[in-house]
Image 1 (tube, one colour):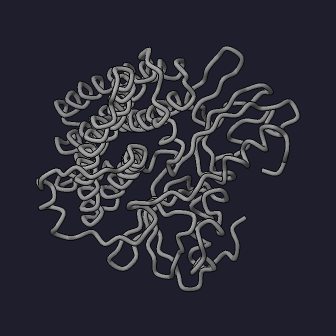
Image 2: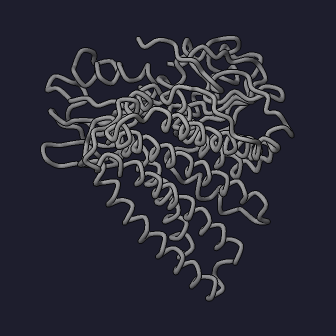
Length: 221
Length: 193
């Protein structure tokens, strides 16, 4: 098994600095050595998470989720600067340059995806959006929101032990706990009573997950 | 009725653009130019869909069948998908250049929260002869098949009617603990789905 990776923002309780990140948007860029691999992995993960989060925000008409999207978008800008600086420092030969250009191209693509997410949440300001649920709910894979009941066997269990994704096909995108968020919950993330989960999957998968989290189903099978 | 059609096009753009991202990353992971080229083709398809949608929506508005707000929403959603498709193309582009990929690229894709996997279906596998709809691999193993290779033919974004045959190569994505399950099923090590 690969060694436990250091997680920068995923799988842990995260309270978004409410006003602070808005200032960070234009702060000075400072060189800070971080492995390129770590930066690129995080950029890829954010680019996938942020799109689901953006669609959830417009689907559930949720301003708070839109704020998270903006926060992640700003973080992505910073990561993109960091990876460019790291790549420049790493290039020694013209072969290095050729290979590193490919890395930067992928990083740039991930960054454009996060910009798209930023555009999607801007739709929250529009007056009428009834067509959005119509469209998103027609997809095979949909976004769902569910609150964990105190009676559920899932409470205080690790996601890995529950095998939610491999049993139901539902991928938990984000957990809302009090006023904190857990992005991309990891295998050792525990589910607690009163958590709100945003998950992506089929009607069928959600049906099982919903029953389980509401305490109407003892085990997932 | 026509309005329904516009909604379906938007959904198609959204689904295809997400598939393209997965295909683009897989093409890098497996050094697969065929998949990378498919991303290019899909990008063209999405461009066409997007242009048709814009025209259709405006015509509907002119006829008074669609409100301006709804038409704008449809176009904005479609635009989001179109831009995601562009990003996928940028990723696939890296594979198509004749430069050896930096090892970090593959490592980053592999270490991500969602893993990609490639596996060949053996004759003795329970998957043989069944459709994806019957197997429900997505909800049973968490692994979604994004592309398949059947002899020399490729199939991208297979649907529930797609049948799996012996020797097919499956490209799938999902959680780490689903990967082994799928590989075991395909190789016939286990028959419990």
